[in-house]
View 1 (cartoon, rainbow, N blue to C red):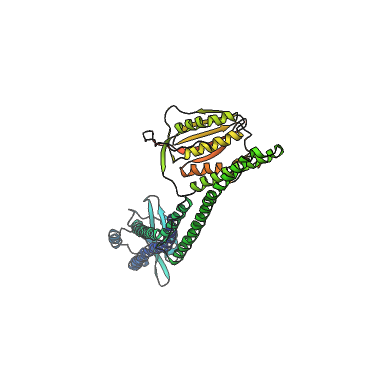
View 2: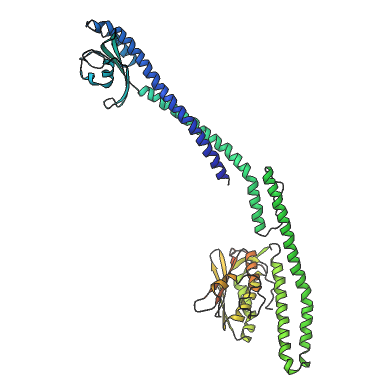
Length: 467
């Protein structure tokens, strides 16, 4: 935002400078050339009055005055008689008559004054020509023409333009510095609001933009923003507390209900056994839902401290723990991991919980084969849990990580497992995605930031098995 505000300052300043300097420079340049023409015409008139009597009486012409003037001013003096023949020419050794066809000479012999500027290829510069008639009593006896290079005036004009350009640069630089300070001052409150909004978006709901030094409108906006952030924080805290409290409160009665139902197995009539088994299965599903809600509530709290763990070792451990469950379900569970340690940075217990959820899902819908993989890919480490099940369509892949989404409602599960996986990956600075496999099935890919190989791997005590 600061560059845009500064650009606005500079554009307006450039326009004002151009509007003021360009006309002023053009005016001064015209004025200098006009002064030169007026002075040259005045001198030509004086010389014409001197040579009037000589040309009128057709007397021999004395070129001393013309030569002195030419030596003093650097101008070329030409005195022309009524027939168009130059009788004095300080720029040539012999009189010439070809000047009689020049526009300014023709005008002077017609009794008019003429001022013309032409470029001289011989001299490589512009020349100012001034011609005045030599007349008396209304009769023209000849003309006096003065010519002078405009290079000196042009040089002065160019110097003036360079001076104006220097002033313009100084003004632009000064305005740029002042504008930068002003722009930073104006945009500092906005940057503070932006930074606070980014903190809240990253999960720090306690961030506030209070006490910013800002104009009244922005200060009001900051106060309104803080009020909104406080309300959001309160609502999210209430929601998290409700989920956590409700889950804790439901856990005990659900456990008791399941035990009571299981105790009824020996006393239920055979025809009612299916209904009892269905009720037990539902209490088990409700228990899993409560556990997932608790896990999600814990994951939604403040960002945990990251620890360094060996992803290869964790994957091998989860493979060993889940192998018996997979064998009982008739699913082949395989693993492919590096022989050396693969350290990653993650929330404590995140890798274990991620793999547990993904393996659990894969065993339910894996199509008889589930494969675990650990791949070091530059700055991240990828955990793969691939199956050969029915897979998901493009729209289902996009929604699979939504909370309580289960796609086919006939499927078991709470619809929270993948939501927990993504949340734990995000808390660890990673990502979670589902890829469709060629030939059918899904590849659940979770990335974690790789840690330096020299980093000490934290003890993974307290890991829990499936269930």
